[in-house]
Length: 124
Image (cartoon, rainbow, N blue to C red; front, side, top):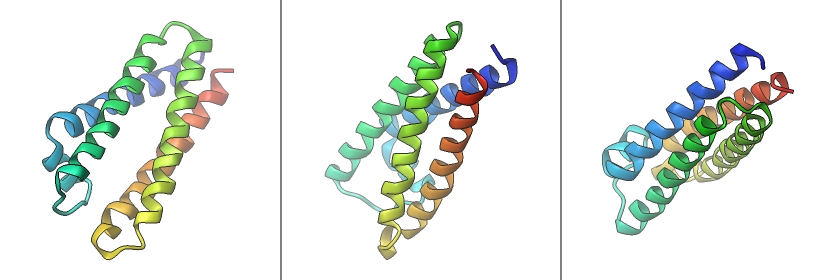
């Protein structure tokens, strides 16, 4: 197993868990840090879904740390979610109230997706 790719995969898993936990347990401050303005309880509930998803994906990545095939699968799923986030937040960037978060989401999501693809290829 490529040690650099494994190390980066584990770093992504840890970061994903930290981001997920902050969104799940400190929703409003996390959303503000991500560039979102005020939201209602519906918006917070949707954000918490994403936080839970990130916690689960991070945990799956860490659990697969010693199994190359499982780690490749986990990082591929993680990257697919990052790409979907980039597209979803990119669509939201056309609205002035979510433009800052949308642009940030495009940059973060596409960067993370590219990193995951690099890791996936290096672990083959």
